[in-house]
Length: 410
Image 1 (cartoon, rainbow, N blue to C red):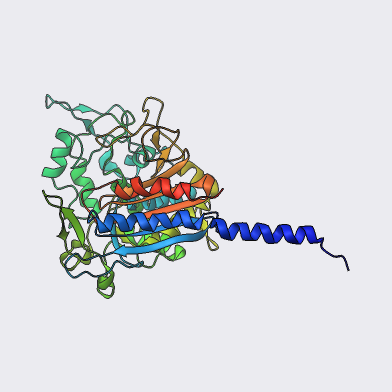
Image 2 (cartoon, rainbow, N blue to C red; image 1 turned 45 degrees about the horizontal axis):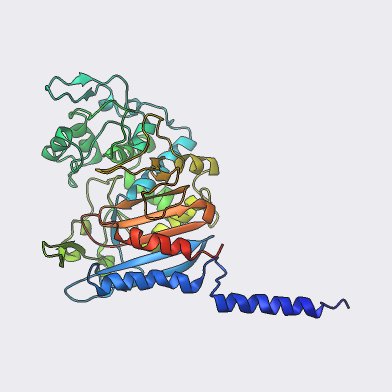
């Protein structure tokens, strides 16, 4: 029998012991450094800057950190839990664009198609002019424009006169259908010519309506059958059903003196009732584990646990920067240097001083209640940070991103 040399045995023992003493983890993290993530969250809680959070970090398909800290109810002290349900708002957007790209793969639509091919009300739009004499748009909005936010559409909370019109018309009315929403928005002028400016907007809600028309299903039904069920996203929906109310978190704000308060209680939340508007731009509630499963599908190139939703080349398209050369980067009342936009995801195309230590190739997005995720495909990394605070704060991404990258041992 061939014997293993003593020197090799000693080397193996020393190597394994060095891993233990250095805190190495088989997922590619230094476990002692990764523990700083939870410690930092706890510091923010102890200083009463945040009430609580759920944080999840995974690498190469394995969860390395998953913690719930603090409280979901400031009044009762109810603990935050790993399966707490959050309002994820605009983290809905990447899911919606995944649905659209499934239709592209099925050859039911093309990314270069004008949206008016399927939604005729978008055919003869006008572009805002401060004189009031709005001018016919020179080109039509394409599906690609909608996915990358270059449509000329707006939001009620960002922009100028057009945004005010969105508010007056109550474009985001939760009690109006997507079809009704399209009728409202197409009667309002575009903020600018399609394809010329990156502007955060209700474009992804338009995509939700597109999915309805093309698939012949309600948007919710399509998401449930084509994405949520295959991925096992059992807690993701446009409302929180009664049997899960006990897991739904309050939403917090901050008063003038900086003290946290409950701005929307779970018990009185609009998300306890199924809406007529199944908003593709910001309507979903979800959990950290559910959203992790969606992210892992993206990281895997469109597949998870034997369920293939998208081709790898389709995912590659989604997480690549598609802004034209004339649009250097994105911004929402700011200037996010080095950040472009793909189909549903912000994409870091180069290193810059903006972004809390982010790495080139990252993709991700956040939601209005201070939820956020990012994926680094070259590192096999997924990070999800869920809070319950409005208006949006960058706190968890800012404080945790560098810690997470520093904890990677290779």
